[in-house]
Length: 399
Image 1 (cartoon, rainbow, N blue to C red):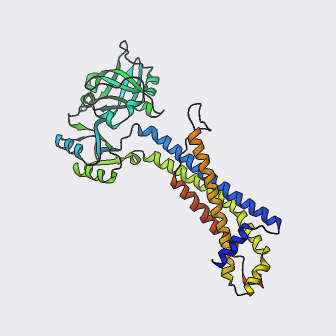
Image 2: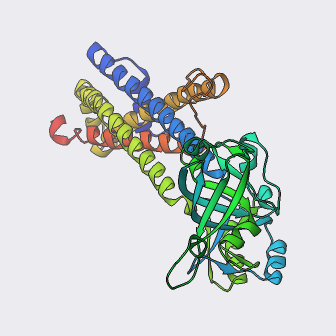
């Protein structure tokens, strides 16, 4: 067995005659364990909040979204549609038309997005599974599905035939406008369903039939503003994106879910990094106890070290003793802290002990990545702390 490792293990697991050193070492051990546990639990909580936050946008965002590189719309030919169907990795696709327009109901108005969708939309999107009232719209009708936020702002219910729900879309063209008919394309709509996902998204869309949206926006039958694609499980996303861009001769931009919500992802990643750095700083402060404990151990074992030095041990081997002692303490403390943290996370997942509301448990996610991050952080900082303390061993100290 390595000489330095053998001595380090003896020092680690045996009590010192100086009770103060035992107390400081115990405090350092507890600090490492608690720090590792706290860091893992907090990272698991933020992973849970990340998944929880993204679950709302995922109800609206497809796996891939195809939009024109320039302009608001592009043309998709029947041949291109057939090729999209046969692309490897594509489970389904939907043609959509989207534009901000004016809605009017019973003296109240609201500017928001009109989104025309085809019959395949429910195969690529799960918005229809979030209906809290009514049903999804039928194709080739004037039926629409509205968000709960829009319903509240306009005091709009379902199947209200006394007060028309109208949409006004600015017409294309130039010249002097002399009447409302020349300024707007308009239509009376029939709300048949109300969806509820989140506060922001509930006020964003009014879903209608694709043909109706194309008529109001004066688009051709094969002219769309976007193509939404659902992927098959475990496919190469990058390869599908490349194939789609090739199919449309690089005249479209293809975005995955992270790119569709770049701001949200950036915010969540920034928060995660900030929390990690804050708790890492707490662990660094706790490791000052480890440095102090090792330095006191060096002074306490000065006579033993002098004996080992006189017997032929080199200074670097004596330094290695305390470097290994501190490193082992960090490894064992990190493992124990991680085990305790994993237990806390699993208990929360299984029994929902901490609640946000009466029906919503605080979200946590167990992740092997978080385990690796915490363990490497604890061990790395522990080795650095041990190296700082072991540098106290010198020939001058032993003379």
